[in-house]
Image (cartoon, rainbow, N blue to C red):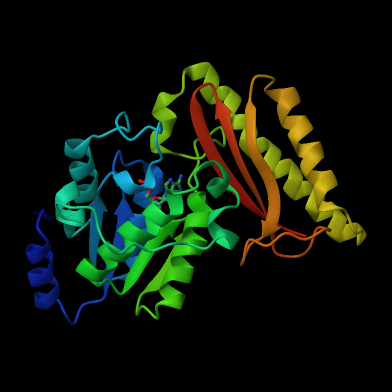
Length: 287
Ligand code: AMP
């Protein structure tokens, strides 16, 4: 496995493997089973795999956890080596963004950027598309892998590739969970043991809503989305009284649009605060 820091090194490598199908897994490090599932898919589907480890400052808002975000490069490199990664790209902020603030930036329009996570993190997805497009231009992968865990991000990156006609296939990988159902996340290290068991109720609620959607489909009933959302919020609050729900919404899985009644291809999205920690999750519920 080669560890690369400079853009020129990446370009040189890309030239030397121009005939290979290159898979790319962008990460912010503190790697866990979720990241490893993405890497596993890339190693399986592509000739070569490159992983980036970069805590991207532009996707963090003021007062968010950029400074204290977990960083553990030595362990990350070992995990990448064991997983069969060919290259790890470890750039610095100035390698990616230069010494001065950029004069050209990308913007995600409000239809996608001001809903769900964008409501409380209004500049987050602009930062994501900025860094992802820079990575795509440097690395020129054939395939890029994103987790369903950050489903809104996956949809936005898919749109980025589509709108800019990028010759890159954007693939999603199902969410990897702890045995209690909690979606694996680098931020789970902020949780105490009791907060972790409280957090397991998030997935429980997602499953309950899926069950509700399954029976609605079976009974051919038209059920108002708002009713299901309110019921799920109430249930979650009763299971974890001190939880703060940022959003709990059912939307279309392809374009994140809302409908009045449970429709086929629905997905439930949730973001909560448990103590100081913000957690997100989502599940395809069909209906
Ligand atoms: P991050 O390091 O949090 O930016 O995540 C890097 C990639 O790993 C993103 O595409 C995430 O969606 C994905 N990812 C993070 N957690 C999980 C998980 N539990 N299951 C699947 N993919 C994940």
